[in-house]
Every structure is written in C-alpha cells, then in structure tokens.
Amino acid sequence: MTTEKTMTGLDPVRRLRVMAAGLNAVMYAEAYVEAPFAEVWAVASDLQGELPHLIPTVRAFHVSPGAGDRKHAWAYGPLGHRAWFDVLLQPGWCLMQSRYVVGGMAGVPEGCGTRFAVLGGLRQSGLAPAQGLLRPLGRLRGLRMIDRVGRRTSLRCR
Image (cartoon, rainbow, N blue to C red):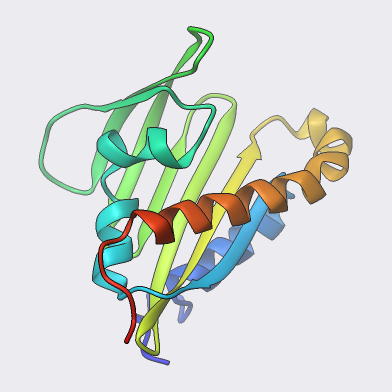
C-alpha cells in the first residue's frame, strides 16, 4: 500500500480514524473504492460541485474563492438552515468545521483503488450520549456516502 505520510507518521485515513475516536463521532466509515485515488479525490475535493450530491442534508455548499488550502464556506440545508464552515482542504484530506458540526474526508491510494473515509460529528460534548445511540445509523450513512463517491467517479480499476 502506497500512502503519503504526515509528520505524525499517520496517513490521512488513519488520521481521520483517530480524530473520529477522539471526537466520539456520530459517523465514521471507511471502505475501499474501486477507482484510482486521483479520480476519487477529484470528486471528494470538489466541495461546491459534489458535496450536495454526496450528503443528502446539504442542498448547497458555497466555497469562498481564494488560493491555498484554508477556505471558508456556507452550507445550506434543504429546509433553509445554513452554517458557516472553516475548511482545510489538502490532497487526501478535508476537514470542515462549523460552530456545531465537524466533518471530514480522507483518501489514500490502495492497490489500483482508494481507501476512503468519512467523518461526521457534533462539537457539543453534552450530546455524547445521543451520539452513541446514533452511531450505527451514522456508519450506514457514511458507507452510503462512500458508495456515492465511487459512483460519481469516471474511471474504475482494471
């Protein structure tokens, strides 16, 4: 398995897994996507164009223009609610944080495909008991999101 290591010695997927455990995240899922990393990450990193297709509770995601890996974005839900997000977007790594929510995606090449992971959690520690009850549903939602990423890629492993 070829992966890009960070200064901590963890590849992006492992880093997201550790973050999910530390946050006691409602949603964490990872799976193999049968598409090259470049294809998978092209879908995942197109936050404005693709996030509404990947997450059913996001109607629109508007990213402020600008260079660099730190960005800001507005997320709009189907019922009109909105949230301001700080975004860190790097190759294989995306972390999005609002006042109440944290979300992330990570990917690394694995064979001819990609190991891909997603994270979703609440930043309010007082909601930890509810998060535990929602975790099985969160994992299922995460796996569905990963499946949608794979279906939205144009190339498959051969």
